[in-house]
Amino acid sequence: MPPRLKLRDIAFFERPVQFARPFRFGAITIDATPQLFVRVEIEVEGRGTAVGASAELLVPKWFDKRPELSPAQTVDGLRRSLEIARGLYLAQTEFLTAFDLHASCIGAQVATCAKKNIPALAAAYGPAEIDKAILDALLRAAETNFFDGMIGNIVGIDARLSPDLKEADIATFLADRKPLPRVAIRHTVGLDDVVEGKGGVADVQENAGARYFKLKLSGDPSADAARLARIGTTLEALGHDYKVTLDANEQYADIEALHALVDRLDHEAALRPITSRLLYVEQPMPRDMTRQSPLGSLAARGFIIDEADDSYDAFPAARALGYRGISSKSCKGLYKSIVNATRAAKWTTGAETFFVTGEDLTCQAGLAVQQDLALGAFIGVTHAERNGHHYVDGFGETPAAEARAFAAAHPDLYADAGQGIRLSIHNGDLLTGSLNTTGFATSVHPDWSALRPLEQPKSLQEYPA
Image (cartoon, rainbow, N blue to C red; front, side):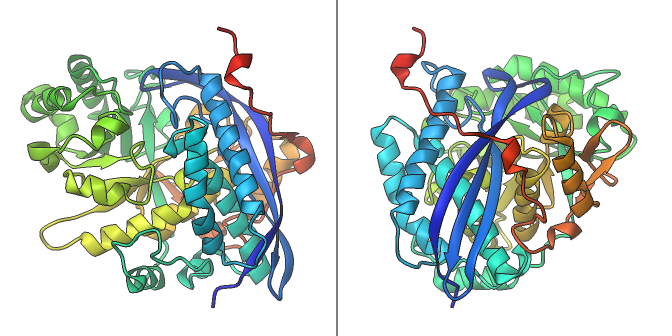
């Protein structure tokens, strides 16, 4: 039986993060945003108390892209999601498994957030971050690591939130896991990033030797095709083979615009360096439009959903529309990632292949990148977008002593080559060996005394008109 626990406390903190270069995706450009930190204390039945932690950027204009909201207002929506989740989780006073706790709260979380005009994707953020911290504490109490703990289903994941699956499907998937010892990075090329020359996509000082590239799209078929042709020409100079993925971040207005892009990909010779190495296209249309638009003949290209992944039924719904994949992001919920990976494994046959990808919402060095990397390595993601090390200068504004502690505890993941402690990339790969440590992929917690409490969200009336 999985161990049971109850929560004693949940505390939220944040730290400013300044970007080393602007990052433009979709219709938004960001150059700074806070990083959230979660600290929980749990009591494990028969095993005493333990403390766990998690972290994630409070990213503006991704979870909620409504044009009438400012970037700051969408960050406040995430703060509200966290506070609502905190109340729901702490209201559960009985001993429960970690997944019991999640399953008991997620429905009320989405419903309560909806009443406060917070969309489902943002609503899931609060439970996702609390769940990671609870898992960290639980693994510490059990004195085991993430990989062994999850193979043994220490959290008690079952099929109550995914009735299309059987209990045996999840149990078999978990028991058969063989975590990857290394995961390739996928280098992100933002819409404002340099393409040619020094600092461009083929510059090893920028791409860290990557063999995979994620190219952002703007939603304009002509402009995107022209830019992809430039990127393809530049990547041909790499001197080694490479693969690419495309990410539109919901910018293609409808299925007709998407057809126009795919027609160019299929027929323009200048795009062959891209199309011949294209693995999939990510979230082309707005999340609401996605559920109304079967892909039809476009499905042959290989499409995945990301922002449309706002519920446990999103992947089955997307499959029925012609999508083959879905992204794993720990900020959307680690349990949902595992359920979706179970589905992909079950659905894949000789005739059809379904898959889960690793997409990084700028996970920062330390807790965030380690926990997301471990999740991907566990479910079999062989390459993952890793843009935190590229858009932020190492550990950013993390105190030097805290950064050194992470580097000492995880020497295969971090190194100081004379420019401060940074993510250490080995021939285009990240190594996962040191993630096999007691807790959720980390031997170190942040310096809580160096963090400020989570800022209280403003009401809409407090923002300037």
